[in-house]
Each structure stands twice: as structure tokens, then as C-alpha cells.
Image (cartoon, rainbow, N blue to C red; front, side):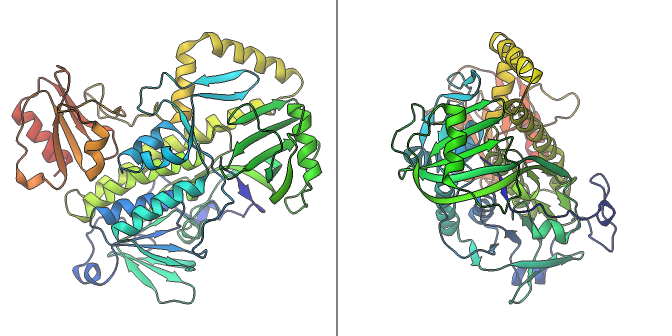
Length: 514
């Protein structure tokens, strides 16, 4: 789940920031077309990540594991919060975590759900997903953060909690980050993963256009006398909806809304209100009691027009926020991080030109926009009233009969259906997500990706040489397939060919791996 609390901040006016399709003015925020100065690189972290949520933790861990010095700044004190917003990991996010050898740890503490019940009989069967993870994994966000923090610590990330960013400035060699009560920090690149009210986004002058999609949503963490029949309970009537999910410690998260109770976020929440809405939608309140936390929030739909200004990037909720429907917020942020981390690594290690960093915007911004639309459509269907209920019923009936449309919706929500743009004339699978292929010798593709390297999957032998061993693994099909695939570190096809010759492969490796 993904939501926001408190009043909506005012976004900077559009004329304070360059249009997403325009390069920033040279004296405002130079394009990252120069390598870091040698003295600067020797005395400062190469990358500063701002925000220690799931997106920032995965990104910082990736960079540090690849040998890139990283400082991670977080304004909150270092403690585990039970106030999780997200409660599910979808298949694509689990694949990315599998490529980092932490998915199995999370599978051990989460609970799999093979059918996703949305509302009014709209059910997505996940058993046929083309993935090792044919389910959604139910677990609170803080469990994901614990695993990713441990990985980042082991990789050598420099954590600095209670460090609030107050601004930043850019020049041709890097970025200076201003931290309240501390000395300025210097880096080649900065990534803001600091949430909806991102200080990094504000510092680079990007607006955050959008609106509140649904207001006065009530949230409570409660104990229940009666256990719900399903792991996740989600239902809607014409004027209300309810979502129930377990924390795993005996408490349940309840998220509910009633059309007739549209009040400001600061209005106090009473447990009787939560019980009343739950009974209206589900017919009973499961004996809920002992709320350890209650709040009222509004859920926004917003997206920055660009995910990059010069040497500064945005990812996760700093770049896009969505309604809770479908539980796509944390999952989208994790995939932002997986896309950006290997590109920053390649540029900082000198294996790619800075132009590679432009593809982060080109690939991830359309995905964020799509998630905005799909989650928004789901929540509007849940909030339907009057004649709209008949339209909803007809749509659900049609979806039940149209397998291609059902597969497309399932692919969008789980993330496995997205692919990235490919050059004209490229092999048809270029840009596509690669499932967990079986490799010769009993291995799997996502095990081969665990070194943060490209993986060349060939039908025959190929000697890539020692010069690329740190950034390329060579594997072979377990089957007799004749396609040669060059798989990016984030699990998407960089290049493919049928009956490829050595010269073809070498040319592809030179272009993509360096």
C-alpha cells in the first residue's frame, strides 16, 4: 500500500524548473557530461542517496556492493517503524530482490497469496505468472527495510541518520549537499529517494503536479477477536471501502473510507468510526480493539515531469506517488532503484558514457505514469456510485471473459508486463523483462545476476576474455534454444540475436558492457 499523511505541500511553480524534455541551463544545473574531478572523487563519496526507505536502501546497497562509495542521509532517527504504508511485494520486485539474494529471506517471513481479490469479484489469479514468484507476498514494509538495510551495511554504505538535507548546489564536477547542523557533503551524483515531500526535488526546482485522488482515508492498527477468512481482505460498496492486512505480530492494518465522512486530515480518528465503516462494507468488524495507532490521510496522484536535473536524480515517492490500489508504490520505487543503480555504476567506473544516465528518465518515467493511471482507475472503480456501479459490474464481467485483457492488467499490477523501448530494427525481445531462465548446469538466470553484472546467455561456448570478468557473466541455455541474449543487470534484454557469430557478440558487448 502507498499513502500520504498530512496536508499536501505546495509544489514549486513550473517556471522554477526546466521542462522534462529540456536540458537545464548551464549556470543552473549542468548536464552530467563530465567525469568527477580526480581530487573530488578521492575526498568525497561518489554518490549521496537521500532517504532510507526501501528505494534508497536498495539503490545504496547496489552501489556499495559494486565498489562505489555511498553516503545515505536520513532525517529520521535510526529505528524500526511499525507504521508501514506498504504491505505487498509483487512478482517483479521479488525478482529484483532475488537478483540480490534477499528474496528468499523475505519469503520466509511473508505470506504468499496466489489470488489478488480487488473488489466485487474482480480477482486476479497469479498462479500463471511467468515468474518464479507466482504470488504476491504479504508482509509489512519494515520487513523489507530490515533486509535491505542489513545488505547495505554489509556492503559498506555510510549511514548518517538525523541528517536533514536543506539544499544543494551543482557545478560541472559534482553536487554539494547542505545538511542541517553539519558540514556540506560533496558527491559526483545525488539521488533523492526522500518521499513525497522530497527536499531534493524542492532543491532542484522540479514541480510535483497532480491532485488528491481520495481524501479522509482512515487508517488504524488494531487487534481482532476474529481472524478474517482471507489473508488480505478488500471490498467496496457504493459509498465505502475497506482493506485489511496482517502485520504478522497479531495486529492488522485497517484502511477504510466513507464518502459521507470528508473531513480534514487533522480531524481525530475514533475506533468506533473504523468499526462502523468496516461493518458497513464487510458486515462485521471482526471484534477489533486495542488500536495502537490511528490516523487520517489523503492519497495523492503526482509525478515529477522529470526524474533528473543535471547530476541529481529522483526515485520512488520523490518522483511519483499513487493511490494505494494494487499496492504498487513500494514495488515501483524498488524497480526505479534497480534501473538506476547499474547505470550509475557503469558511468562512475568508466565503462559507459554519461549519456547512459539519460535512459533512466526514458525508461522509468513512462512506467510511473502507467502506474499512476492503473492505480487511479482501480480506486475510482472502488469508489463508484449510482450508475457507475452498473458500469463497474459490466467491466468486471467483461474482464472475466477476456483473457488477454486480464493478463495485461495482471502484468501491470505485478510489474512483469512492462518492457523498455528498443532501437528500431532490434530483435523483438530487446527491452523485454527476462524471466528466471533455467541455465545449463542447473543454475538460474537471477542467481547469475547476483554479481550485479550483465549475463550473456548463449547456445554455445563463448570466451568473453578476462577484461570483462568484473561486469559480465557467460551462461548457456539449459534447453536447445538458439537465441543469444545479453541481459542487463536489472534483468532486461540489452541485445539479442539468432545464430549470432562471435563478431556480432563482441560488437554487442563493446556497445553495452564496455
